[in-house]
Structure formats: structure tokens, C-alpha cells
Length: 206
Image (tube, rainbow, N blue to C red; front, side):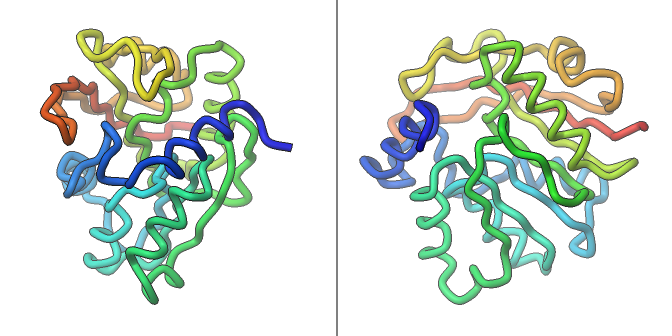
């Protein structure tokens, strides 16, 4: 039995092409910048939370990463990536799961989340996300989390969102991770609308 959240996101990716959603970006420039800035290497493991149809996995495979996991609540989003990658998709672990109802089976060196956390508007959803983060991120691991900034949209894909400054996001993720860097970036949607994001890099401390 699917939840309303699952039904919503499955419908989004069933009704639209990946390049027609607001968060589409031809190249994951800010994500790669974050990885480079803190010396993440292809020998490490990485999980992309809400990675769906993102092209980050393509870019990482091209860089030689070989321990990649992509998690998304919407199976059609993952199917779009698998079709795009073709035979190379066999080199990636694909997980259909709701991050608020998932316990990682292992720990990863890098946790990447561009635009999932800001959809968690209820305290219990955020608490579940943090539990998954702490179960899934290795000690001294890197967490890259991007959300809408305070001047960003109040809604996205028909849903309300939470908007964050870096300090507020750090407080939401708790004392088990330390904020090491933050910056703003303006994302342009496929139809030319500007969306301001807060990007944060955290290090697992416990």
C-alpha cells in the first residue's frame, strides 16, 4: 500500500519528463563543487538521497566512482536514470524508499541531498530523516545538504516547503554533524524562474 507522499512523487515523474521538473539541472555543478571542495574521492562511497532522475550519478561514474547508491521515493524517477545510463546502471545500487521510513543497511562516506529535506514540513519527518542520516553516515563522513533559502519558493511541486538559513539547517540536523561551509546558489528552472538555495557541508563528528 503506497502513501500519499509516494503517490504524489510517482505521479510527478509519470506525468513529466525529468527535464521538465523545476529542479532539473543539465549538470550538477554545485554538487560537484561541494565534493571537490572537501576532497571527496572516487574511492569513497556515496548515497544520493532523492537522487531520482538527477544526472549527478552520471557525472560521478564518469569520474570513476564505483560505490554509488541512489535512493528515491519514486520508482519512475529511478527508472529514468537507469534508462539514461543504459548498461552503466548496473554499477549503481538503486533503492526505492521514503527517507522518513528507511534505515540504512550500511554507512556511507558521503551523504548527498539536493532538495529533499526542505519537503519535510513535519517535526516527525525531520526527526526520521536525522535518524537515517546518523545511521547512514560514517564517522568523519561528509553530508552535503541543499534546501531552499529563506527567499526561495514557499511551495514546490504543489507542496509546501521549509526554507533554511545555514544555522537553522545545522540546528535541525543536530549536534552529531558540524557545519563546515555554506553558500547560496541561484538555480534557474527550465522555464527561467529563479530559485535560491542554501548549500551546506557538514562533517559527522560522533
